[in-house]
Image 1 (tube, each protein chain N blue to C red):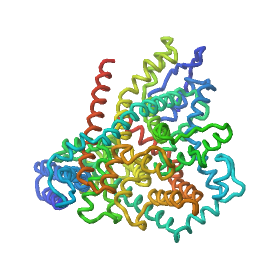
Image 2 (cartoon, rainbow over the protein chains, first blue to last red; image 1 turned 90 degrees about the horizontal axis):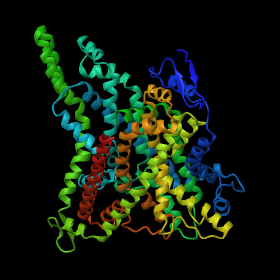
Image 3 (cartoon, rainbow over the protein chains, first blue to last red; image 1 turned 135 degrees about the vertical axis):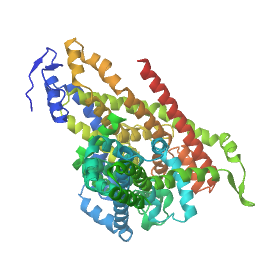
Image 4 (cartoon, each protein chain N blue to C red; image 1 turned 120 degrees about the vertical axis):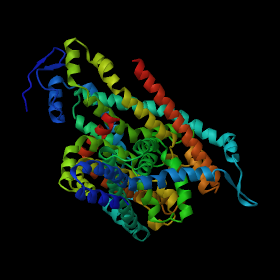
Length: 317
Length: 315
Protein backbone atom coordinates (compact mmCIF):
# COMPACT_ATOMS: atom_id res chain seq x y z
CA UNK A 1 0.00 0.00 0.00
CA UNK A 2 1.41 3.40 -0.92
CA UNK A 3 2.21 5.63 1.99
CA UNK A 4 -0.06 8.52 2.58
CA UNK A 5 1.39 11.78 3.75
CA UNK A 6 -0.92 14.47 4.80
CA UNK A 7 -1.06 17.98 6.06
CA UNK A 8 -3.66 18.62 8.62
CA UNK A 9 -5.50 21.86 8.78
CA UNK A 10 -6.32 23.44 12.10
CA UNK A 11 -9.91 22.30 12.14
CA UNK A 12 -8.68 18.79 11.72
CA UNK A 13 -11.44 18.35 9.21
CA UNK A 14 -9.52 18.02 6.02
CA UNK A 15 -6.27 16.35 5.25
CA UNK A 16 -4.62 16.66 1.91
CA UNK A 17 -3.39 13.43 0.55
CA UNK A 18 -0.54 13.79 -1.87
CA UNK A 19 -1.32 10.58 -3.66
CA UNK A 20 -3.98 8.05 -3.85
CA UNK A 21 -7.74 8.49 -3.82
CA UNK A 22 -7.81 6.60 -7.05
CA UNK A 23 -7.20 3.19 -5.57
CA UNK A 24 -10.59 1.64 -5.35
CA UNK A 25 -10.30 -0.66 -2.36
CA UNK A 26 -12.47 0.31 0.50
CA UNK A 27 -9.74 -0.56 2.96
CA UNK A 28 -7.30 1.96 1.64
CA UNK A 29 -10.12 4.42 1.27
CA UNK A 30 -11.07 4.01 4.89
CA UNK A 31 -7.52 4.59 5.95
CA UNK A 32 -7.31 7.67 3.84
CA UNK A 33 -10.55 8.75 5.39
CA UNK A 34 -9.10 8.47 8.85
CA UNK A 35 -6.20 10.62 7.78
CA UNK A 36 -8.67 13.15 6.48
CA UNK A 37 -10.75 13.20 9.63
CA UNK A 38 -8.73 12.20 12.61
CA UNK A 39 -10.82 13.74 15.33
CA UNK A 40 -13.80 11.74 16.52
CA UNK A 41 -16.85 13.68 17.56
CA UNK A 42 -18.45 12.69 20.84
CA UNK A 43 -21.67 14.58 20.11
CA UNK A 44 -22.10 12.84 16.78
CA UNK A 45 -21.32 9.48 18.36
CA UNK A 46 -23.94 9.99 21.06
CA UNK A 47 -26.55 11.04 18.50
CA UNK A 48 -26.01 8.06 16.24
CA UNK A 49 -25.73 5.89 19.34
CA UNK A 50 -29.33 6.82 20.15
CA UNK A 51 -30.40 5.56 16.73
CA UNK A 52 -28.50 2.34 17.33
CA UNK A 53 -30.29 2.05 20.68
CA UNK A 54 -33.69 2.51 18.96
CA UNK A 55 -32.75 -0.30 16.57
CA UNK A 56 -31.37 -2.68 19.18
CA UNK A 57 -33.83 -2.10 22.04
CA UNK A 58 -36.62 -4.37 20.74
CA UNK A 59 -34.09 -7.14 20.08
CA UNK A 60 -32.66 -6.77 23.59
CA UNK A 61 -36.19 -6.83 24.95
CA UNK A 62 -36.87 -10.04 23.00
CA UNK A 63 -33.75 -11.77 24.33
CA UNK A 64 -34.47 -10.77 27.94
CA UNK A 65 -38.09 -11.86 27.79
CA UNK A 66 -37.31 -15.16 26.12
CA UNK A 67 -35.58 -16.09 29.39
CA UNK A 68 -38.73 -15.60 31.47
CA UNK A 69 -41.43 -18.04 32.42
CA UNK A 70 -45.01 -17.01 31.66
CA UNK A 71 -45.53 -15.97 35.30
CA UNK A 72 -42.35 -13.86 35.26
CA UNK A 73 -43.29 -12.31 31.93
CA UNK A 74 -46.59 -11.06 33.28
CA UNK A 75 -45.21 -9.83 36.58
CA UNK A 76 -41.71 -8.46 35.99
CA UNK A 77 -40.46 -5.24 34.36
CA UNK A 78 -39.88 -5.66 30.61
CA UNK A 79 -36.18 -4.84 30.55
CA UNK A 80 -35.25 -6.59 33.79
CA UNK A 81 -34.59 -10.32 34.11
CA UNK A 82 -37.24 -12.48 35.74
CA UNK A 83 -36.95 -14.45 39.00
CA UNK A 84 -35.77 -17.57 37.24
CA UNK A 85 -33.87 -18.28 34.03
CA UNK A 86 -36.36 -20.17 31.90
CA UNK A 87 -34.79 -19.90 28.43
CA UNK A 88 -34.02 -23.62 28.11
CA UNK A 89 -37.40 -24.63 29.50
CA UNK A 90 -39.06 -22.26 27.03
CA UNK A 91 -37.09 -23.65 24.08
CA UNK A 92 -37.94 -27.23 25.04
CA UNK A 93 -41.58 -26.27 25.47
CA UNK A 94 -41.64 -24.48 22.07
CA UNK A 95 -40.54 -27.70 20.39
CA UNK A 96 -43.04 -29.76 22.41
CA UNK A 97 -46.13 -27.58 22.15
CA UNK A 98 -48.94 -28.91 19.93
CA UNK A 99 -47.11 -32.19 19.30
CA UNK A 100 -43.92 -30.45 18.19
CA UNK A 101 -45.43 -28.61 15.23
CA UNK A 102 -42.79 -25.89 15.58
CA UNK A 103 -40.12 -28.21 14.15
CA UNK A 104 -42.43 -28.93 11.22
CA UNK A 105 -42.78 -25.17 10.59
CA UNK A 106 -39.03 -24.74 10.90
CA UNK A 107 -38.49 -27.53 8.38
CA UNK A 108 -41.08 -26.04 5.99
CA UNK A 109 -39.38 -22.64 6.23
CA UNK A 110 -35.98 -24.17 5.54
CA UNK A 111 -37.35 -26.00 2.49
CA UNK A 112 -39.10 -22.88 1.14
CA UNK A 113 -35.98 -20.81 1.70
CA UNK A 114 -33.39 -23.25 0.36
CA UNK A 115 -35.33 -24.30 -2.73
CA UNK A 116 -36.71 -20.82 -3.41
CA UNK A 117 -33.42 -18.98 -2.93
CA UNK A 118 -31.36 -21.54 -4.90
CA UNK A 119 -33.73 -21.70 -7.86
CA UNK A 120 -34.36 -17.95 -8.02
CA UNK A 121 -30.66 -17.16 -7.80
CA UNK A 122 -29.77 -19.66 -10.51
CA UNK A 123 -32.51 -18.35 -12.81
CA UNK A 124 -31.41 -14.78 -12.12
CA UNK A 125 -27.79 -15.66 -12.94
CA UNK A 126 -28.84 -17.43 -16.14
CA UNK A 127 -31.06 -14.53 -17.21
CA UNK A 128 -28.63 -11.82 -16.09
CA UNK A 129 -25.87 -13.49 -18.08
CA UNK A 130 -28.11 -13.61 -21.15
CA UNK A 131 -28.97 -9.92 -20.76
CA UNK A 132 -25.35 -8.88 -20.33
CA UNK A 133 -23.52 -11.14 -22.76
CA UNK A 134 -25.89 -12.67 -25.28
CA UNK A 135 -28.10 -11.18 -27.91
CA UNK A 136 -31.68 -12.18 -28.41
CA UNK A 137 -34.91 -10.82 -29.79
CA UNK A 138 -37.11 -8.82 -27.46
CA UNK A 139 -34.38 -7.93 -24.99
CA UNK A 140 -35.44 -4.31 -24.65
CA UNK A 141 -39.06 -5.24 -24.11
CA UNK A 142 -38.08 -7.81 -21.50
CA UNK A 143 -35.89 -5.33 -19.63
CA UNK A 144 -38.64 -2.74 -19.69
CA UNK A 145 -41.29 -5.13 -18.37
CA UNK A 146 -39.09 -6.75 -15.71
CA UNK A 147 -37.71 -3.47 -14.38
CA UNK A 148 -41.23 -2.04 -14.45
CA UNK A 149 -42.45 -5.00 -12.41
CA UNK A 150 -40.10 -4.06 -9.57
CA UNK A 151 -42.34 -1.02 -9.12
CA UNK A 152 -45.57 -3.04 -9.00
CA UNK A 153 -46.81 -3.49 -5.42
CA UNK A 154 -46.22 -7.11 -4.41
CA UNK A 155 -49.45 -7.38 -2.47
CA UNK A 156 -51.48 -6.10 -5.40
CA UNK A 157 -50.10 -9.15 -7.21
CA UNK A 158 -50.62 -11.63 -4.40
CA UNK A 159 -54.42 -11.64 -4.49
CA UNK A 160 -54.56 -12.17 -8.28
CA UNK A 161 -51.85 -14.84 -7.83
CA UNK A 162 -54.02 -16.57 -5.26
CA UNK A 163 -57.06 -16.45 -7.52
CA UNK A 164 -55.06 -17.87 -10.41
CA UNK A 165 -53.43 -20.60 -8.32
CA UNK A 166 -56.82 -21.51 -6.88
CA UNK A 167 -58.03 -21.88 -10.45
CA UNK A 168 -55.17 -24.35 -11.08
CA UNK A 169 -55.82 -26.07 -7.76
CA UNK A 170 -52.33 -25.61 -6.35
CA UNK A 171 -53.27 -23.42 -3.37
CA UNK A 172 -52.69 -25.08 -0.01
CA UNK A 173 -49.66 -26.93 -1.41
CA UNK A 174 -45.99 -25.95 -1.05
CA UNK A 175 -45.94 -25.05 -4.76
CA UNK A 176 -48.15 -22.06 -4.09
CA UNK A 177 -45.40 -20.58 -1.92
CA UNK A 178 -42.44 -21.87 -3.93
CA UNK A 179 -43.38 -20.86 -7.49
CA UNK A 180 -43.73 -17.09 -6.84
CA UNK A 181 -40.43 -17.14 -4.94
CA UNK A 182 -38.61 -18.50 -8.01
CA UNK A 183 -38.96 -15.13 -9.75
CA UNK A 184 -36.71 -12.39 -8.39
CA UNK A 185 -36.66 -9.36 -10.73
CA UNK A 186 -34.28 -7.41 -8.51
CA UNK A 187 -31.92 -10.39 -8.42
CA UNK A 188 -32.00 -10.53 -12.20
CA UNK A 189 -31.10 -6.85 -12.29
CA UNK A 190 -28.17 -7.31 -9.88
CA UNK A 191 -26.89 -10.30 -11.84
CA UNK A 192 -27.14 -8.40 -15.11
CA UNK A 193 -25.18 -5.43 -13.74
CA UNK A 194 -22.60 -7.66 -12.12
CA UNK A 195 -22.09 -9.88 -15.17
CA UNK A 196 -21.60 -6.84 -17.40
CA UNK A 197 -18.91 -5.58 -15.03
CA UNK A 198 -17.13 -8.65 -13.76
CA UNK A 199 -17.14 -11.16 -16.61
CA UNK A 200 -14.81 -10.26 -19.51
CA UNK A 201 -16.36 -11.01 -22.90
CA UNK A 202 -12.93 -11.95 -24.32
CA UNK A 203 -12.69 -14.83 -21.89
CA UNK A 204 -16.10 -16.15 -22.94
CA UNK A 205 -15.16 -15.85 -26.61
CA UNK A 206 -11.90 -17.69 -25.96
CA UNK A 207 -13.80 -20.54 -24.32
CA UNK A 208 -16.17 -20.72 -27.26
CA UNK A 209 -13.30 -20.71 -29.75
CA UNK A 210 -11.88 -23.64 -27.77
CA UNK A 211 -15.10 -25.46 -28.53
CA UNK A 212 -17.10 -25.00 -25.33
CA UNK A 213 -20.84 -24.72 -25.86
CA UNK A 214 -22.78 -21.72 -24.61
CA UNK A 215 -24.10 -23.52 -21.55
CA UNK A 216 -20.72 -24.98 -20.65
CA UNK A 217 -19.12 -21.56 -21.06
CA UNK A 218 -21.70 -20.18 -18.65
CA UNK A 219 -21.28 -22.91 -16.06
CA UNK A 220 -17.49 -23.24 -16.15
CA UNK A 221 -16.32 -19.71 -16.95
CA UNK A 222 -19.00 -17.20 -15.98
CA UNK A 223 -20.64 -18.85 -12.97
CA UNK A 224 -17.48 -19.03 -10.82
CA UNK A 225 -16.87 -15.33 -11.52
CA UNK A 226 -20.43 -14.57 -10.46
CA UNK A 227 -20.00 -16.26 -7.08
CA UNK A 228 -19.86 -13.05 -4.99
CA UNK A 229 -22.96 -11.61 -6.66
CA UNK A 230 -24.70 -14.97 -6.29
CA UNK A 231 -24.09 -14.96 -2.54
CA UNK A 232 -25.57 -11.46 -2.37
CA UNK A 233 -28.68 -12.42 -4.34
CA UNK A 234 -28.98 -15.65 -2.32
CA UNK A 235 -28.79 -13.71 0.92
CA UNK A 236 -31.49 -11.22 -0.06
CA UNK A 237 -33.77 -14.01 -1.36
CA UNK A 238 -33.12 -15.93 1.85
CA UNK A 239 -34.31 -12.97 3.91
CA UNK A 240 -37.33 -12.14 1.78
CA UNK A 241 -38.55 -15.75 1.66
CA UNK A 242 -37.87 -16.41 5.36
CA UNK A 243 -39.77 -13.23 6.24
CA UNK A 244 -42.62 -13.68 3.78
CA UNK A 245 -45.96 -13.41 5.52
CA UNK A 246 -48.67 -12.32 3.12
CA UNK A 247 -48.15 -14.93 0.42
CA UNK A 248 -48.22 -18.03 2.67
CA UNK A 249 -51.02 -16.43 4.70
CA UNK A 250 -53.35 -16.38 1.71
CA UNK A 251 -52.04 -19.51 -0.04
CA UNK A 252 -51.96 -22.02 2.83
CA UNK A 253 -54.76 -23.35 5.00
CA UNK A 254 -53.19 -26.54 6.35
CA UNK A 255 -51.00 -25.86 9.43
CA UNK A 256 -48.68 -28.67 8.30
CA UNK A 257 -47.49 -26.48 5.40
CA UNK A 258 -47.11 -23.26 7.39
CA UNK A 259 -43.77 -21.47 7.52
CA UNK A 260 -42.59 -20.05 10.85
CA UNK A 261 -44.06 -16.58 10.34
CA UNK A 262 -47.62 -17.85 9.92
CA UNK A 263 -47.30 -20.43 12.68
CA UNK A 264 -45.94 -17.82 15.05
CA UNK A 265 -48.90 -15.57 14.46
CA UNK A 266 -51.29 -18.49 14.96
CA UNK A 267 -49.75 -19.11 18.38
CA UNK A 268 -50.00 -15.46 19.17
CA UNK A 269 -53.71 -15.44 18.31
CA UNK A 270 -54.14 -18.55 20.41
CA UNK A 271 -52.72 -16.75 23.43
CA UNK A 272 -54.98 -13.76 23.03
CA UNK A 273 -58.19 -15.57 22.20
CA UNK A 274 -57.82 -18.21 24.88
CA UNK A 275 -59.03 -15.70 27.43
CA UNK A 276 -58.05 -16.26 31.01
CA UNK A 277 -56.69 -19.76 30.70
CA UNK A 278 -53.79 -20.82 28.53
CA UNK A 279 -51.64 -17.80 27.83
CA UNK A 280 -48.44 -18.82 26.05
CA UNK A 281 -46.69 -15.50 25.51
CA UNK A 282 -43.44 -16.97 26.80
CA UNK A 283 -43.61 -19.51 23.97
CA UNK A 284 -44.53 -16.89 21.37
CA UNK A 285 -41.58 -14.74 22.42
CA UNK A 286 -39.12 -17.63 22.54
CA UNK A 287 -40.36 -18.89 19.15
CA UNK A 288 -39.94 -15.37 17.74
CA UNK A 289 -36.36 -15.33 18.99
CA UNK A 290 -35.69 -18.74 17.44
CA UNK A 291 -37.19 -17.46 14.17
CA UNK A 292 -34.80 -14.53 13.84
CA UNK A 293 -31.61 -16.15 15.15
CA UNK A 294 -30.71 -17.87 11.83
CA UNK A 295 -31.25 -14.60 9.94
CA UNK A 296 -29.14 -12.57 12.35
CA UNK A 297 -26.35 -15.14 12.13
CA UNK A 298 -26.53 -15.14 8.32
CA UNK A 299 -26.39 -11.34 8.24
CA UNK A 300 -23.55 -10.98 10.69
CA UNK A 301 -21.42 -13.64 9.02
CA UNK A 302 -22.08 -12.49 5.46
CA UNK A 303 -21.68 -8.74 5.98
CA UNK A 304 -19.29 -8.42 3.08
CA UNK A 305 -21.97 -9.63 0.68
CA UNK A 306 -24.94 -7.53 1.64
CA UNK A 307 -22.75 -4.47 1.69
CA UNK A 308 -21.35 -5.15 -1.77
CA UNK A 309 -24.83 -5.93 -3.07
CA UNK A 310 -26.24 -2.72 -1.73
CA UNK A 311 -23.42 -0.63 -3.14
CA UNK A 312 -23.73 -2.33 -6.52
CA UNK A 313 -27.43 -1.52 -6.60
CA UNK A 314 -26.81 1.99 -5.32
CA UNK A 315 -24.08 2.96 -7.73
CA UNK A 316 -25.90 1.60 -10.73
CA UNK A 317 -29.36 2.59 -9.60
CA UNK B 1 -35.61 -26.09 -28.04
CA UNK B 2 -32.61 -24.00 -27.17
CA UNK B 3 -30.40 -27.05 -26.97
CA UNK B 4 -31.40 -28.19 -30.41
CA UNK B 5 -30.50 -24.80 -31.79
CA UNK B 6 -27.16 -24.83 -30.06
CA UNK B 7 -26.42 -28.20 -31.60
CA UNK B 8 -27.33 -26.77 -35.01
CA UNK B 9 -24.92 -23.96 -34.46
CA UNK B 10 -22.09 -26.22 -33.40
CA UNK B 11 -22.79 -28.56 -36.29
CA UNK B 12 -22.62 -25.57 -38.60
CA UNK B 13 -19.34 -24.58 -37.09
CA UNK B 14 -17.65 -27.90 -37.70
CA UNK B 15 -18.83 -28.34 -41.28
CA UNK B 16 -18.64 -24.79 -42.57
CA UNK B 17 -15.61 -22.87 -43.66
CA UNK B 18 -14.08 -20.16 -41.54
CA UNK B 19 -15.91 -17.37 -43.38
CA UNK B 20 -19.28 -18.85 -42.61
CA UNK B 21 -18.49 -19.59 -39.04
CA UNK B 22 -19.01 -16.16 -37.53
CA UNK B 23 -22.50 -15.40 -38.88
CA UNK B 24 -23.71 -18.91 -38.10
CA UNK B 25 -22.48 -18.60 -34.54
CA UNK B 26 -23.99 -15.20 -34.19
CA UNK B 27 -27.37 -16.51 -35.23
CA UNK B 28 -26.99 -19.43 -32.83
CA UNK B 29 -26.15 -17.06 -30.03
CA UNK B 30 -29.29 -15.07 -30.68
CA UNK B 31 -31.36 -18.14 -30.07
CA UNK B 32 -29.30 -19.46 -27.17
CA UNK B 33 -29.84 -16.13 -25.39
CA UNK B 34 -33.55 -16.83 -25.48
CA UNK B 35 -32.94 -20.28 -24.02
CA UNK B 36 -31.01 -18.69 -21.11
CA UNK B 37 -33.72 -16.18 -20.35
CA UNK B 38 -36.65 -18.56 -20.99
CA UNK B 39 -36.92 -20.17 -17.50
CA UNK B 40 -37.03 -16.78 -15.82
CA UNK B 41 -39.23 -15.33 -18.53
CA UNK B 42 -41.84 -18.09 -18.45
CA UNK B 43 -42.13 -18.02 -14.66
CA UNK B 44 -42.26 -14.24 -14.77
CA UNK B 45 -45.21 -14.39 -17.14
CA UNK B 46 -46.90 -16.99 -14.93
CA UNK B 47 -46.36 -15.10 -11.67
CA UNK B 48 -46.67 -11.47 -12.80
CA UNK B 49 -48.41 -11.05 -16.15
CA UNK B 50 -51.08 -13.77 -16.10
CA UNK B 51 -52.35 -12.92 -12.58
CA UNK B 52 -52.80 -9.26 -13.52
CA UNK B 53 -54.71 -10.18 -16.67
CA UNK B 54 -56.76 -12.73 -14.73
CA UNK B 55 -57.52 -10.14 -12.04
CA UNK B 56 -58.69 -7.75 -14.76
CA UNK B 57 -61.03 -10.46 -16.02
CA UNK B 58 -62.34 -11.32 -12.55
CA UNK B 59 -62.93 -7.69 -11.70
CA UNK B 60 -65.72 -7.65 -14.28
CA UNK B 61 -67.77 -10.17 -12.28
CA UNK B 62 -69.74 -9.97 -9.06
CA UNK B 63 -70.83 -12.74 -6.72
CA UNK B 64 -74.62 -12.51 -6.47
CA UNK B 65 -76.89 -14.32 -4.07
CA UNK B 66 -79.11 -15.28 -6.96
CA UNK B 67 -77.37 -16.42 -10.12
CA UNK B 68 -73.88 -16.87 -8.62
CA UNK B 69 -70.99 -15.23 -10.43
CA UNK B 70 -72.42 -12.81 -12.97
CA UNK B 71 -70.82 -10.49 -15.47
CA UNK B 72 -71.37 -6.92 -14.37
CA UNK B 73 -69.03 -4.95 -16.58
CA UNK B 74 -67.39 -2.07 -14.77
CA UNK B 75 -69.82 -2.15 -11.85
CA UNK B 76 -67.08 -3.12 -9.41
CA UNK B 77 -65.07 -0.08 -10.39
CA UNK B 78 -67.94 2.37 -10.08
CA UNK B 79 -68.79 0.82 -6.73
CA UNK B 80 -65.17 1.17 -5.62
CA UNK B 81 -65.01 4.84 -6.51
CA UNK B 82 -68.03 5.47 -4.31
CA UNK B 83 -66.81 3.23 -1.49
CA UNK B 84 -66.10 5.43 1.54
CA UNK B 85 -64.25 2.59 3.30
CA UNK B 86 -61.80 2.25 0.42
CA UNK B 87 -61.08 5.98 0.29
CA UNK B 88 -60.73 6.07 4.07
CA UNK B 89 -57.92 3.52 3.76
CA UNK B 90 -56.33 5.29 0.80
CA UNK B 91 -56.37 8.57 2.74
CA UNK B 92 -54.77 6.88 5.74
CA UNK B 93 -51.86 5.36 3.80
CA UNK B 94 -51.46 8.67 1.98
CA UNK B 95 -51.00 10.62 5.24
CA UNK B 96 -48.91 7.84 6.68
CA UNK B 97 -46.60 8.00 3.66
CA UNK B 98 -46.42 11.78 3.80
CA UNK B 99 -45.06 11.66 7.37
CA UNK B 100 -43.25 8.34 7.69
CA UNK B 101 -41.22 8.41 4.45
CA UNK B 102 -39.60 11.83 5.04
CA UNK B 103 -38.84 11.00 8.68
CA UNK B 104 -37.25 7.68 7.76
CA UNK B 105 -35.23 9.05 4.84
CA UNK B 106 -33.98 12.10 6.73
CA UNK B 107 -32.85 9.80 9.53
CA UNK B 108 -31.18 7.50 7.00
CA UNK B 109 -29.39 10.39 5.27
CA UNK B 110 -28.20 11.86 8.58
CA UNK B 111 -26.88 8.47 9.68
CA UNK B 112 -25.17 7.90 6.34
CA UNK B 113 -23.54 11.35 6.54
CA UNK B 114 -22.42 10.61 10.09
CA UNK B 115 -20.90 7.30 9.02
CA UNK B 116 -19.23 8.94 6.03
CA UNK B 117 -17.79 11.78 8.10
CA UNK B 118 -15.44 9.31 9.78
CA UNK B 119 -16.04 11.12 13.05
CA UNK B 120 -17.85 8.30 14.83
CA UNK B 121 -16.55 6.03 17.50
CA UNK B 122 -17.69 2.51 16.66
CA UNK B 123 -19.01 3.34 13.18
CA UNK B 124 -19.07 -0.33 12.26
CA UNK B 125 -21.23 -1.16 15.26
CA UNK B 126 -23.68 1.61 14.36
CA UNK B 127 -23.88 0.44 10.76
CA UNK B 128 -24.58 -3.18 11.64
CA UNK B 129 -27.03 -2.48 14.46
CA UNK B 130 -29.08 0.01 12.44
CA UNK B 131 -29.27 -2.45 9.54
CA UNK B 132 -30.10 -5.50 11.69
CA UNK B 133 -33.89 -4.81 11.91
CA UNK B 134 -34.07 -5.33 8.14
CA UNK B 135 -33.49 -9.03 8.80
CA UNK B 136 -36.41 -9.28 11.24
CA UNK B 137 -39.72 -10.52 9.79
CA UNK B 138 -42.63 -8.09 10.03
CA UNK B 139 -44.47 -10.67 12.13
CA UNK B 140 -41.72 -10.78 14.74
CA UNK B 141 -41.29 -7.01 14.63
CA UNK B 142 -45.01 -6.47 15.20
CA UNK B 143 -45.01 -8.99 18.05
CA UNK B 144 -42.00 -7.35 19.71
CA UNK B 145 -43.25 -3.79 19.40
CA UNK B 146 -46.79 -4.85 20.22
CA UNK B 147 -45.70 -6.47 23.48
CA UNK B 148 -43.10 -3.84 24.26
CA UNK B 149 -45.26 -0.76 23.72
CA UNK B 150 -48.40 -2.43 25.06
CA UNK B 151 -49.92 -1.17 28.29
CA UNK B 152 -50.79 -4.63 29.54
CA UNK B 153 -47.38 -6.30 29.83
CA UNK B 154 -45.11 -3.81 28.12
CA UNK B 155 -42.90 -0.91 29.06
CA UNK B 156 -45.75 1.58 28.80
CA UNK B 157 -47.67 -0.40 31.39
CA UNK B 158 -44.70 -0.09 33.76
CA UNK B 159 -44.33 3.59 32.88
CA UNK B 160 -47.98 4.29 33.56
CA UNK B 161 -47.77 2.45 36.89
CA UNK B 162 -44.67 4.36 37.92
CA UNK B 163 -45.86 7.81 36.89
CA UNK B 164 -49.59 7.34 37.32
CA UNK B 165 -50.12 8.32 33.69
CA UNK B 166 -52.46 6.80 31.15
CA UNK B 167 -50.35 6.70 27.98
CA UNK B 168 -51.35 4.13 25.38
CA UNK B 169 -49.38 3.81 22.14
CA UNK B 170 -52.15 1.64 20.69
CA UNK B 171 -55.11 3.88 21.37
CA UNK B 172 -57.05 4.58 18.14
CA UNK B 173 -55.49 8.03 17.85
CA UNK B 174 -51.88 6.87 18.25
CA UNK B 175 -51.87 3.43 16.60
CA UNK B 176 -50.77 4.82 13.25
CA UNK B 177 -47.87 6.60 14.94
CA UNK B 178 -46.78 3.33 16.56
CA UNK B 179 -47.01 1.54 13.21
CA UNK B 180 -44.86 4.31 11.75
CA UNK B 181 -42.29 3.65 14.44
CA UNK B 182 -42.19 -0.04 13.53
CA UNK B 183 -41.85 0.61 9.80
CA UNK B 184 -39.16 3.24 10.36
CA UNK B 185 -37.38 0.80 12.64
CA UNK B 186 -37.37 -1.88 9.96
CA UNK B 187 -36.26 0.11 6.91
CA UNK B 188 -34.06 3.01 8.01
CA UNK B 189 -30.97 0.82 7.99
CA UNK B 190 -31.44 -0.41 4.45
CA UNK B 191 -31.75 3.14 3.11
CA UNK B 192 -28.82 4.26 5.23
CA UNK B 193 -26.65 1.56 3.65
CA UNK B 194 -27.56 2.66 0.13
CA UNK B 195 -26.84 6.31 0.90
CA UNK B 196 -23.58 5.39 2.59
CA UNK B 197 -22.52 3.36 -0.45
CA UNK B 198 -23.27 6.32 -2.72
CA UNK B 199 -21.27 8.67 -0.48
CA UNK B 200 -18.33 6.27 -0.47
CA UNK B 201 -18.29 6.43 -4.27
CA UNK B 202 -17.79 10.24 -4.28
CA UNK B 203 -14.27 10.95 -5.60
CA UNK B 204 -12.08 12.02 -2.70
CA UNK B 205 -10.45 14.70 -4.89
CA UNK B 206 -13.60 16.78 -4.48
CA UNK B 207 -13.11 16.91 -0.71
CA UNK B 208 -9.47 17.83 -1.11
CA UNK B 209 -10.37 20.63 -3.52
CA UNK B 210 -13.05 21.84 -1.12
CA UNK B 211 -10.55 21.81 1.74
CA UNK B 212 -8.07 23.81 -0.29
CA UNK B 213 -10.80 26.36 -0.96
CA UNK B 214 -11.38 26.57 2.78
CA UNK B 215 -14.87 25.05 2.71
CA UNK B 216 -16.39 24.14 6.06
CA UNK B 217 -17.71 20.66 6.76
CA UNK B 218 -21.25 21.99 6.55
CA UNK B 219 -20.53 23.43 3.10
CA UNK B 220 -19.03 20.12 1.96
CA UNK B 221 -22.22 18.37 3.03
CA UNK B 222 -24.45 20.91 1.30
CA UNK B 223 -22.48 21.39 -1.90
CA UNK B 224 -20.95 17.95 -2.50
CA UNK B 225 -22.55 15.19 -0.45
CA UNK B 226 -26.26 16.06 -0.65
CA UNK B 227 -26.18 16.64 -4.44
CA UNK B 228 -24.39 13.29 -4.79
CA UNK B 229 -27.28 11.64 -2.92
CA UNK B 230 -30.01 13.21 -5.04
CA UNK B 231 -30.70 10.45 -7.55
CA UNK B 232 -30.51 7.63 -5.01
CA UNK B 233 -32.84 9.66 -2.81
CA UNK B 234 -35.42 9.87 -5.59
CA UNK B 235 -35.25 6.09 -5.99
CA UNK B 236 -35.52 5.56 -2.25
CA UNK B 237 -38.59 7.82 -2.12
CA UNK B 238 -40.25 5.83 -4.90
CA UNK B 239 -39.60 2.46 -3.29
CA UNK B 240 -40.67 3.73 0.12
CA UNK B 241 -43.95 5.00 -1.35
CA UNK B 242 -44.53 1.63 -2.99
CA UNK B 243 -43.82 -0.02 0.38
CA UNK B 244 -46.04 2.18 2.54
CA UNK B 245 -48.96 2.20 0.08
CA UNK B 246 -49.21 -1.56 0.43
CA UNK B 247 -48.78 -1.70 4.19
CA UNK B 248 -50.53 -4.81 5.47
CA UNK B 249 -48.64 -6.95 7.96
CA UNK B 250 -48.64 -4.62 10.95
CA UNK B 251 -52.33 -3.67 10.86
CA UNK B 252 -53.27 -7.26 10.11
CA UNK B 253 -51.39 -8.68 13.11
CA UNK B 254 -51.89 -5.93 15.70
CA UNK B 255 -55.61 -6.47 16.40
CA UNK B 256 -54.87 -9.96 17.71
CA UNK B 257 -52.42 -8.43 20.19
CA UNK B 258 -54.11 -5.30 21.46
CA UNK B 259 -57.80 -4.70 21.88
CA UNK B 260 -59.38 -1.40 20.81
CA UNK B 261 -56.46 -0.27 18.67
CA UNK B 262 -58.88 1.33 16.24
CA UNK B 263 -57.79 -0.91 13.39
CA UNK B 264 -60.79 -1.66 11.18
CA UNK B 265 -61.17 -4.22 8.41
CA UNK B 266 -60.56 -1.43 5.90
CA UNK B 267 -57.72 0.29 7.80
CA UNK B 268 -55.43 0.11 4.75
CA UNK B 269 -56.45 -0.67 1.16
CA UNK B 270 -54.57 -3.97 1.16
CA UNK B 271 -56.13 -5.07 4.43
CA UNK B 272 -59.51 -4.21 2.90
CA UNK B 273 -58.73 -6.21 -0.26
CA UNK B 274 -57.62 -9.16 1.86
CA UNK B 275 -60.77 -9.07 3.97
CA UNK B 276 -62.98 -8.70 0.90
CA UNK B 277 -61.37 -11.66 -0.84
CA UNK B 278 -61.01 -14.04 2.08
CA UNK B 279 -63.70 -13.28 4.59
CA UNK B 280 -66.27 -11.55 2.39
CA UNK B 281 -65.61 -13.76 -0.65
CA UNK B 282 -66.07 -10.76 -2.94
CA UNK B 283 -63.18 -11.75 -5.13
CA UNK B 284 -64.14 -9.70 -8.16
CA UNK B 285 -64.39 -6.58 -6.02
CA UNK B 286 -61.06 -7.37 -4.31
CA UNK B 287 -59.41 -7.84 -7.72
CA UNK B 288 -60.72 -4.45 -8.86
CA UNK B 289 -59.39 -2.90 -5.65
CA UNK B 290 -55.95 -4.47 -6.10
CA UNK B 291 -55.71 -3.19 -9.67
CA UNK B 292 -56.88 0.33 -8.81
CA UNK B 293 -54.45 0.44 -5.90
CA UNK B 294 -51.58 -0.69 -8.14
CA UNK B 295 -52.53 2.03 -10.64
CA UNK B 296 -52.63 4.70 -7.90
CA UNK B 297 -49.24 3.55 -6.54
CA UNK B 298 -47.59 3.57 -9.93
CA UNK B 299 -49.10 6.99 -10.74
CA UNK B 300 -47.80 8.49 -7.48
CA UNK B 301 -44.38 6.87 -7.86
CA UNK B 302 -44.20 8.12 -11.44
CA UNK B 303 -45.18 11.66 -10.43
CA UNK B 304 -42.47 11.66 -7.75
CA UNK B 305 -39.93 10.40 -10.25
CA UNK B 306 -40.75 13.10 -12.79
CA UNK B 307 -40.64 15.78 -10.10
CA UNK B 308 -37.46 14.42 -8.58
CA UNK B 309 -35.71 14.27 -11.91
CA UNK B 310 -36.88 17.75 -12.91
CA UNK B 311 -35.48 19.12 -9.65
CA UNK B 312 -32.27 17.30 -10.36
CA UNK B 313 -32.02 19.11 -13.69
CA UNK B 314 -32.77 22.47 -12.10
CA UNK B 315 -29.83 22.21 -9.74
